[in-house]
Image 1 (cartoon, one colour):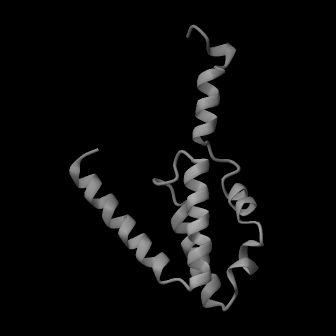
Image 2 (cartoon, rainbow, N blue to C red):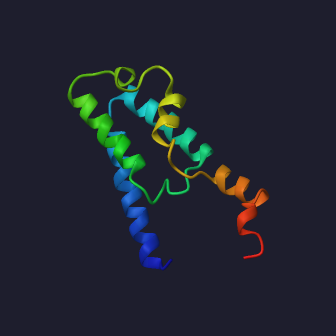
Length: 108
């Protein structure tokens, strides 16, 4: 990763966070909780993928239509997040694979 990639990544992150700050307060609070949860659970492609920007898109649409954030996602934020990443590889998956390698690939 070159310096230009780092600079571009920071620009994109700042623009993303500016969108988050423009959300209504209840949406911002829930987004921050989702972000913390997703950083802990650790989908491997979280920062490179479209998950976080997609959540902001979804929240912007919900706020524009006058809905409360919990009307969109339900009252269980963690369950909503789990559903979003159910088909994603996580760092926990990578760890499990490292300590329990597939026996069919041993020695290859």
